[in-house]
Image 1 (cartoon, helix red, strand yellow):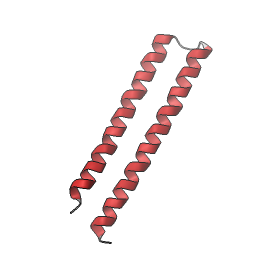
Image 2: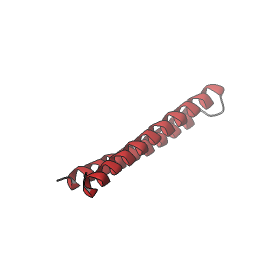
Image 3: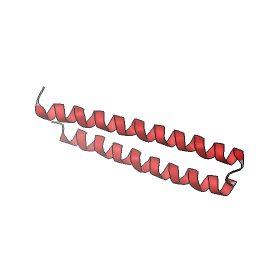
Length: 77
């Protein structure tokens, strides 16, 4: 395996780890926000705003992973 192929595989592995981490963080955040709303510690509007923020951050993380994977594919021979 060439250094280039090795670097490409390492980049894909890092991207997969980042995607997994982003999804786990988003799931935990969603769960916590919904639990807070159900417990009455935040209003529906506050919960909705927080959920939207989490979703935007998740989308940004997934875009970064997609870009990293796209860049990796472009580097491949």
